Amino acid sequence: MHRPCSILLGCLALLAVVDGGLVWHHRCQERLFAVADEVRRVTVAGLGLSDLCLATEARYTRHPAVTDLVVPFMDHPGAMDHFPTGSFWAAPVIVR
Amino acid sequence: MSFAKQLNLIDYSLSSLWRRRFKSLGVMVVFAGVIFLLASFQMTTKALTSLAAESLAFAPEITIQKMRAGRQESIPVAYQARLSEILGITAITPRVWGYYFNETKGANYTILGLDPLSMPLGDQLGRAIDQRRLPREHEVVLGRGVQGAASGSGSSIISLFRPDLSLKAMTIVGNFQPETDFLTYDTLFMGLADARDLFGLPPEMVTDLCVTVANPSEVATVAKKIASLLPDTRVVTRQQVQKTYQSVFGWRSGFASVCLLTALTSFIIFAWDKASGLTPEEKKEIAILKMVGWQTADVLALRFWEGMIVSLLSFVVGYTLAYVHVSFFEAALFRPILIGWSVIHPSIPLRPTVNLGETLLVLCLTVVPYLTATIIPSWRAAIIPADSAMN
Image (cartoon, chains in turn red, purple):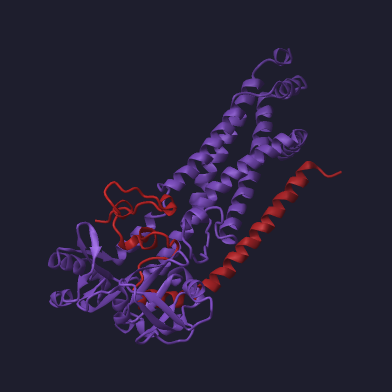
């Protein structure tokens, strides 16, 4: 009969194999991304882009780098931030 | 203690965990869930930050925007002439950009008009477009999200409303490559004159000015000179753009705080339940072990191994699942909050990384308190004389 230790070792080995597979996948992805990075660089430089297109619902989450900190509240006096993405994106630190 | 003795203790710990398998499994699921949530958020925010840092390394060195009453407004093209005396500026490119709301689809598009040939690497921009050519007059290049949302009929013409509701028809001459989706998915790229016509801007106005500086080490100095020459403007440097993205996905954002608080609260309840005492069966087991000759140190070692096995297995499983969640499913759990009410949103190629320092931080925040919460009640039970414990 197997010792309980060997079952634990089997579980750990299985996890090691799974994690090893993930490391291998990560390296393959790195190579693919490196090829695409060149096209992205050209796009960013050629169009002068300042932001990523992650959320398109509000201008302050579509272009956070070039909008003001007060933008979520400036639609009218006393305006509240009502877009859901505003809860995910922290206000950027003011760079002096 | 000898290695063989430790192995025997681990064997006994595993048997003990197996005897209480449903409770042990429940503990592991909660533990792994907390670690999964913490690690997923950590990996997602880090992957987004690195994606922004790598992609925006070629953002405009300086962008000049005119401000009035705390809002950005159009800037006169004539401002370019006022910057001619600043040494170090190699090019100033006027841009017209803004947002277009498609009422039929409920989607927001980003309209961008400029002459890319005056921008760095602008002559190679064709590589980012499937037809390998830049738009000329009355032509437009679409991001893939706009292509899908705007011209599902397969038409090569797109019509957009001007502010006076007259229609402006433009010929679609290409799409941005899929590799640029997370930069251009909602973008319509056209010539400066077409963008100005679409937004109804007068010919002497643009949205902002992109400044190219010859020497990167002079960017800050040039930016200061621009700010002093044009006091009614905001001068945004590439460094500021990158710093924004370094902090924008931080732990201080509202969602992150909720996520962190939920995870920590559930973990505290869980650890409190463990630390508040042992069950009568567990106390009885310790008493029997002491009666058959186990020392207090042996009992503590036994509980240590039990806690270690449960917490380490949960940690590895939680972390692995977090990696799979972020890498293969693009952080699907956080995606509804990340994109909000956006109608068009690209897939985001997240590349999660496992950093030793951050992993150790999560380990210390979860495994160490759990081990402490496991061992202390056992120590309390183990120092009681066996006969008292049995009674």
